[in-house]
Length: 166
Image (cartoon, rainbow, N blue to C red; front, side, top):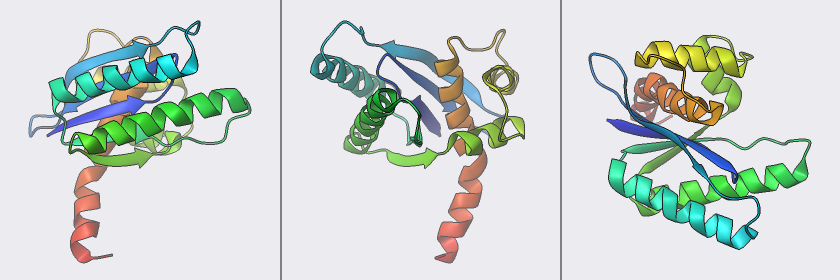
């Protein structure tokens, strides 16, 4: 199963596609979609939408795991993250993918064992879990891969709960 993690952002939107198998997770694609801050908001959103659509068409994930947007001190940043998140979820559904959301603390706990881990610890664990030579850079790519790994770790439990009708 391919899981595409999305760390939403307008300037940098991280993505990490991870394949889950019996032998363990494997990185399929890691990176960041960037939009120029000098461009107008509608153009940036349109560019991000096209890039996400192309990623979904190329990678064909079964599931897209998106970081849940939480309140931030900077309202402007929160709005941009929320818009990017909405685009990612809408494009994923349009591509026929299941969409799940995880909080930053859920992701950190699933990947590092500590819901308060810093970005460096998340990057190191993503590197270790995926057998990479170095931690993914920038951190947005590592965070996106961590989202995919979080889903792969929690998917069996989610399936059991769904099967019980709870």
